[in-house]
Length: 320
Length: 283
Image 1 (cartoon, rainbow over the protein chains, first blue to last red):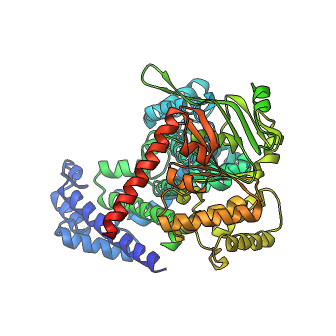
Image 2: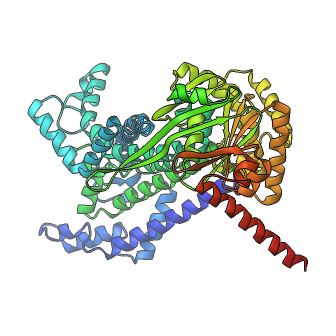
C-alpha cells in the first residue's frame, strides 16, 4: 500500500513536470491561435486584444499556468478556442473513440502474439519458426503508414469495406444489428493496421523470453520428471517468461491514447489523432496540453498497472 | 553394435550404454556454414546397481551429454541405452514415460535448476503431481516428509528457492529428485560450487540416501580428489568416448590410457601441493 502511495505521488510529480514543460514549449513556439485572425481585415485589433484578454493570453506564463491548474482542479482542463467548449468535454468524447479502437487492436495483437510466440519458441529453428520470424521481420520493416495505405489501396480496389471514418451516413437511423455491422466494418482497417504494427514486436518479445526460459535448468529438471509439453510451456515456461511481457503490456496500456494518432488522422477516425493535429495547427493551446497530459496519465497508469501485475505474478517481487 | 555391447556388458548392470553417438550442429556465419560438434563418439558404459560410478574427463569431453542422454533429456543419434534390461533408447515414448521417473537428475546450479516462482513444497511435490500420485494435501504432506529426509525443516515449505542458501537449495533439488523413488540418480556436478563444509554435508546426505533407498549414482565431476574418495567405479571420458573404466584403485592407482594417466597425475600434484601447504601452515 505504501508502495502504491509512493508511486501515485511520483506520478503526480511527473504530471506536474510534464504540464510545466508543455506550457514552456507552447510559449516558446511561434504564433498563437489569434494570429490568423489578425490577417482578417474584418476583425479589428481591439477585438483580438479583447479576446486575448478574455482567455488570459495577455498574462505572463506563470499566471496562465496557474489559471490552467485551477481549471484542472475544477475538472475542465482549460478551454478550447476553436471548439468554444471546455477541453474536458472534447477529450472525453474523442478519447472514448480512441480507446475503443486501440484497446481492440491491443487485445487482438496480444491474442495472436502470445500463442504464436510460445509456439515458435517451442520449436526454434524449424520452418514454422522461420516463417514467423520472416513474417515479423517484414512487418517490422514496414512503417504504419505503408500498412494503412496498402489497406486503403485494397479497400478502394475491392470496395469491400468503408474507406474511413467511424460510421456511415444515416448511422442514427439504422437498427442495432446494422449499427454494429457498420461500426465493425469501419473498425477493420484501423484495428488491422494497429494490430499488425504492434504484433511483430510483441511476438518477438514473447518468443525471445520463452526461448531463454526454455533453455533454463529448471525447465530441463521439469522435463526430467516426465512433464507434458503443454504443461511445461504454459505452467512453467510462460509464467517464468512473463515478467518482461508484463512490462510490455504496461507499455501497451500506456500507449492506448497515443499509439494510434497517425492512423486515426489518416483514416479520419474521430479520436484524439485528428484533434491533436487540428489543435497543433491552429495553436489551440489547452487542447494540445490536455491531450499530452491525458497520454502521460495513461502512460503512468499503464506502468503502475504493469508493476502491480508483476507483484501479483512473481512471488519474488513480494519477497523483496 | 548393440548386441556386441550386450554380450560385453555384465549381466548385473543397471544401465548399459553401447556405442552412443551424439552430434550437435548449428548454422552460423553469413554463408550459413554449419558448425558440427561430435559430443559423443560411440561411448560405452555400464553402471552397476547400488554403486557410485563417477564419470570424469576434461571440459567438453561429453560427460554432461552422456548424462542427458541417459536422463532422456537429449536424443542420441545412434547407439543404445538399456535400463533395468529395458531399452530406453531407441525407445517408444510410452516406454520412456514409464521409465522416466526411475532416472532422476540433480544439476550443478541449484539456483537455476529450481523454478523460482514455486514454493519449496510445490517444487518437491511436482514430480508426484505429474505422475498423479495423490491429492494436493497428501502431496504437500509427502513433500514435507521428503524435506525432513534431506535435512530441511518442513516449516520452510512455503519459502521460495531464493530464500534458501546454496546448500539448502541443493538439498531441495535432491528431495525433488528422490520423490519418485528413482533407481538411478545422476549428479551432474551437483557438488561443485559449494564450500567444502557444505559439500561434505551434501555428500554425507547422498551416501545416507543411497544406503536407505538402494540408490545408484552416476556422479559427473571435475573434482578428482572427491571422486577418488567416494566413487566405487570411475569411467574416464575423452573426446566423446569412454577411454577407461574400472574401480577407483585401478583407474587412479594404475591408469592405462594416456588421458587417465594425466588425470591421475593431476590428482597427485594437487594432493602434494595440499600436503606441502599444510606442512607450511603447521610449522
